[in-house]
Length: 170
Image (cartoon, rainbow, N blue to C red; front, side, top):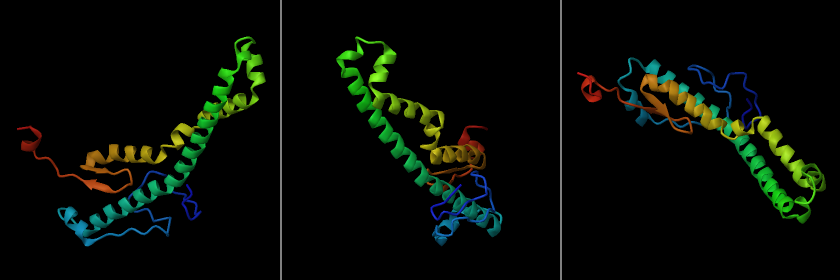
């Protein structure tokens, strides 16, 4: 994983409590107003671990955003080129008169863009454009066990524990 500063991270994408921050340029502002949200925790150490986890998660997601945006732009450009090539290919009167392979041979722009588009999907562009949301969704799945969730940016959302009377169980 490479952050915007160009530093390489050897840590996995899955955030782990206690991992050091690898992108020094990211500044996270923590106000003391957030501490009452976690006042029911047993110790300040747990609160610090939770804040470190949130910083690491936010960092992981924000480091994936520039790459995802680049892949989105590549997909957009190739899609527009493919649509333009398909339009010219389908509007050619010779397309209906000749065989399919000869028709593709007569339209090399469309053929090359189509092959490029297929190659991009085989290379996994459909996962790369949504990589930050994949990480956030997987973290949400794990965090539900701890009565927490996270935003798409990686900010943690603490949920109150449901008592038996609130959940409908008696």
